Amino acid sequence: MKINGKEIELILPMTLGDLVAGSGYCEDRVAVELNGRIVPRSEYANVSLDNGDSVEIVGFVGGG
Amino acid sequence: MIPSEEEFDKALCIRHGPEVHGKVKNATVGIAGLGGLGSNIAAMLTRAGVSHLVIADFDRVDISNINRQNYYLRQIGSVKVEATEELLKAINPYMTIDGHDVRLTPSNIPEIFKGCDIVCEAFDVASEKAMLINTILEKCPGTKIVSGSGLAGYGRSNEIKTKKLLEDLYMCGDDTDMKGVKGGLMSPRVNVCAGHVANMVISLLMKEEP
Image (cartoon, rainbow over all chains, first blue to last red; front, side, top):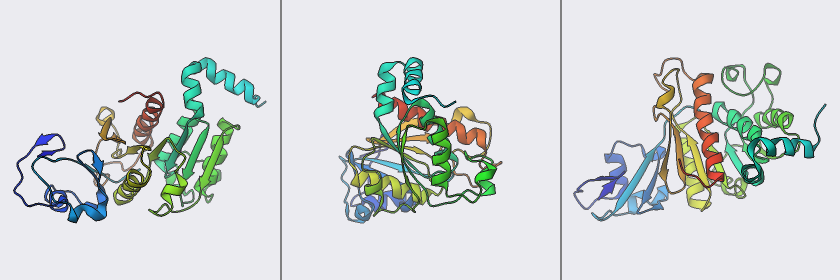
């Protein structure tokens, strides 16, 4: 599957929540698009990933 | 002497050209947070001719803000929304400003920003940035967001970039958390980032990508 534009082979089954946490992100500081559609944060734990998926994870940092 | 609305409009139209001026003037832009980023973005967009702004912040002007935020000593203690409104009206007395002196939450964000073409995310805390962006992307489809993330310290001007990260999300900054960055938050670099955000807003109004 594609994560932020890079091809990565996932060990399935894996949820979007697992991927976000496993990639070093803090769930309350990200926005995630799955196959071009925004995923509500409450859904991360319920979304199962597939090797054909494309995920974009955006992390935010403090200061403004 | 303050120029008439017609004189003001004509001056901007001559400066920017009728096509750019028309699109910029007729847009509605939201600014969430009126700190270092938001207060300066608001002033830049107003000077550029954006004539309809929706601004929101729950805070008051503090002495610790003066090093980077677009406020003056006489405004210490004022509600930030009102202080910003006063300064913007001194640049363009004919613009409309929809000010909200509230803490933004998932329940009030869609209602406050529903008429905006673009919303600038200018919060301080990372989790609040994520909350605002997720709420708008989920609840206000078609609204574009320009976010400022990573602008602390001094120097390294060229590390601040504008990128399109999601279908409706653009991010300006160096992606580095302020914790541990020498100098904390300082006016020049905050304004480099605020300039990126305001510049991306104008580009999007002209239907141009970064």
